Image 1 (cartoon, rainbow, N blue to C red):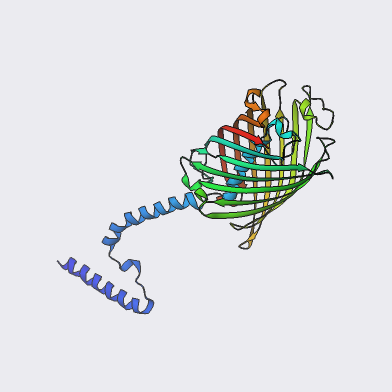
Image 2 (cartoon, rainbow, N blue to C red; image 1 turned 45 degrees about the vertical axis):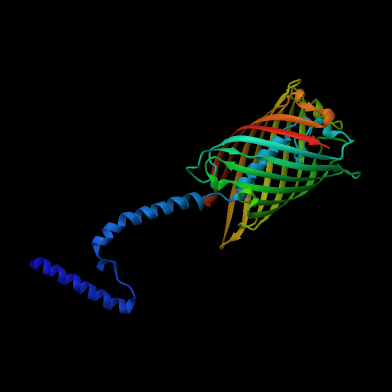
Length: 367
């Protein structure tokens, strides 16, 4: 009884001390609170804090949306360029029928790409990424015209949707365009072909409901291709040597400036070597492309950020002649791609690694 009276007296004095202190400091220290209530509330508080941290780790640490859409565009462009008769013109990047090269059309091509992929890191987070199947249908309308003064002008408008069975936070819709002027004389398809390109990009939440980011890219660079026969001997350079090649090595190098409203703008250097194999009299071909993009971001919050994005893309293309209807300027092809992408940066939240594997059906109609 005396012990209990002593404890009650101590507790009362503690409360009075806290009240007096509160008048001066407007708070009570934790040591004067009812420990029994703290003990009951602690597990719930810890659980709520843990859930909050878990949610934050999957959203705040995800890579910027433009990094993810960069990988998607590189993936689609690799499929677009993997065509025996299109040379190195990477500006328009169209998977077109041979009939699209005829001079009696208007230079327009409507194309579609329907890839179904397994993605190892849908949300592009630094670790413990969400594994998911990915569906990324895409349509493009392109136009190209060769001017008399050795300048080729081309334009492209692209719409695509990216959907995941898991990791729905990564679902996006994207529209972008490309406008390019490139020196192509028509006398030698293995010549250096310098270009200037402007490419705006709009990134939306699903169903193009809300614009989440807008980018403007300005690129200055050059394309170069080297064609070889089956014995790795250089193919002579008539106006079109691609029809006689078995192996092709192509390189695109450019420097670009990116302006965006979703983060700091940046200056980028891009080097894209690729190796392609076109077996003679076979309805298929294979290409391996590596895209290396060192990026220097503008200073933000009194600090600058440097990152390097690297993407390796292996593409197998199957294109039997029975899938090409030249009289209607239409063609159908089947691709299978293995894509490995990574972004390395001292700023951990934008670093990630990602695998994407799967087939893609592509078609085109020129007019």
